[in-house]
Image (cartoon, rainbow, N blue to C red):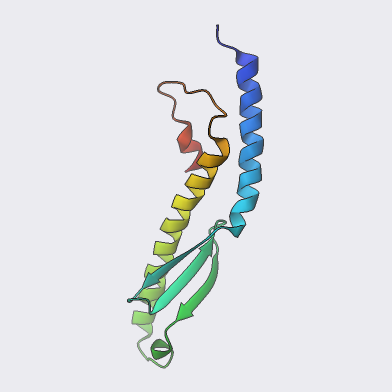
Length: 111
């Protein structure tokens, strides 16, 4: 017989663990680079840009379009990387808390 009360307790426990882990994600960071490291963008687990670093050779450059493209590329790389880290943190935080129900993908809760 399926234990619905036990399942509800596990859901509440998982929700609390998820909330706790989400609060910690702001301290997780990831950096993306473009232009062979000429532009570096660092984002946090809250998906906010925390720093942008340029190679000195770009600062005096008048090619604003290239600089803009490099920043966009580095930001997108950092955002993709932080998403992977966020999913790993959330999975680790809730691992073993919920029963393995065939056909039910709880991993999508974290994406």
